[in-house]
Length: 422
Image (cartoon, rainbow, N blue to C red; front, top):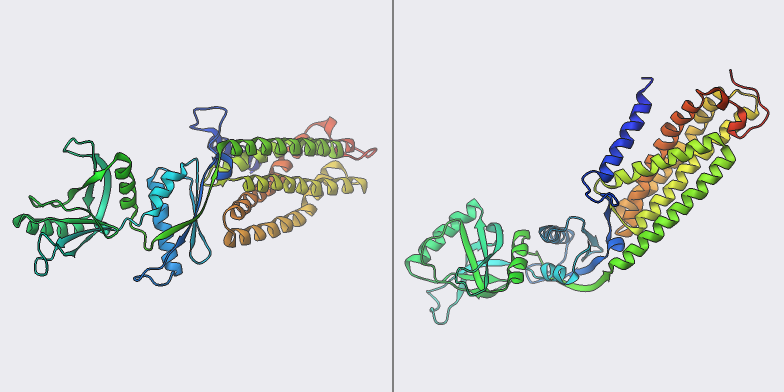
């Protein structure tokens, strides 16, 4: 047990550095995921619109809409997007580093796919009346863009059906093939093609039409993600340039560096040895926090603010401890005993303070949106790591320093003319 805490510190620090840099070919960059306001991209606000089938936008409808939009964004190859419910009928989509035009194109269309046949009892081939076959986009397993076999430069959407859908489609296509009848392919209630079925089709097929490559890719993304439960209207959009984001990063780094330097000078001047060791612990705290930020947290400008604020809280914990140590030495305790008492008596105050902050972070995380939630998450991670840093890392470093005789003098703890602790 003697070496448990030092090994724990080394393990967590090493793991954080591994998360932060491993697998990155560019040694100057990290695995941190940066948000829209730091790397640029698109921020789009959509409003759900009621229909005859869905006359009222409920929470369930909005949740379904959110899921489909998430699927479409992920199918586009973007993994760091934020899709958030806003109010009773709105969805906010934030996609770092994305072309807003492509995003709008792929998210706005409802993409309700249906296969229909002609009602021969009530219409003719010349004036067809289409009826549902029961085969829809919900039966699709996957879809992808493919070049047209005709060689005319057009593109098609090759699709594969789920097992149940394949059974229905096989019976349908077999029946249509016998009569050499067309199969109507409808997208959002619009007929896009009506090829005559030549043979029975089971699991795989193609959607043909006058598609360009981009059209085919967009439609494949939409079909793979599923149809929107209700139409959406784009009510606002904002594009953040990468230059603005880079400028924000540089200013944030400067602010963080200046803040850390001032804190380090103050700590060393006021508390001498413990202040120096606390500065070392603060560097460890920074690396550990950044390492944890790579675990599914997208770092925004507000998140950086929360992180820098948590640095101040980490220092605050050290100040409480070191002031208590100075007070104990001033009352005649030896250095060893003063250090033990300092950490012991400061612990309740540090714990209560951090717990209160975490409660606030929890409330902001649960009820806040967008930047507020990002601020709450990074602050919460910073608070927990700062608690570990103050209670474990700083404590181990101070304990290591006391192994040297010349450092076991009250002077090195900010107090003059006190006896050695033998």
